[in-house]
Length: 216
Image 1 (tube, rainbow, N blue to C red):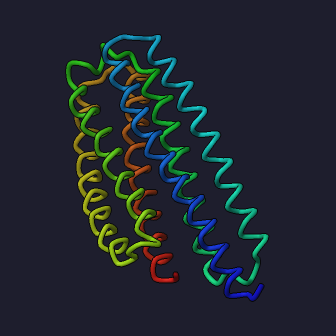
Image 2 (cartoon, rainbow, N blue to C red):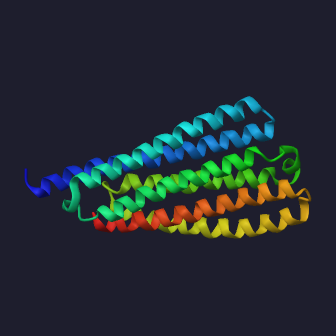
Image 3 (cartoon, one colour):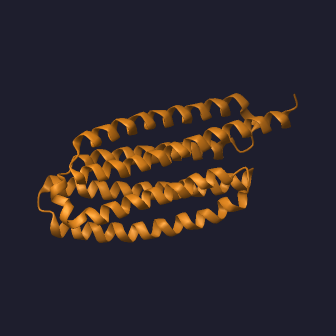
């Protein structure tokens, strides 16, 4: 089998795994939304169930990232864009870590403390997480179908990232004014910092997807 065919097969397989990884991230963000709703509803059973499902998805994402690494190592130098592919897979893995951190901190804040002043803001931010990860998922889907759409979607991710930066600053100031318990303030601030950091990581993944689209 000649090298060009080997590279084609490797490309198809690794991108398929990458697409599965981004789909898992989207499912993880949706589970975070369910957990957030359960927190504000005071349903501890559903919070625990969501937390457990999220842990399973996070482990699956790690397995997929390792699988991509093994595939890239196996094909070696025959894959010209292997570094771009690995970089993208690792960014997706890091997004998963951010979501895990957000869920942990959010689940440890007294919901009554933030329900009155921050429930709408937080739910809106969680919706933003789902939206930006949906864009990332779409970018992975268009890689092999219409790469130019991947580049267009990158602009939408950039717009969302700018909006989140602004909202993060507004919520930080509001939290400093409204939350007086040091523990709640620290956890809430860490939560919104985690959201802002996660969207920044999505921006990096978006840039990496753009490079990958140009490479293949």
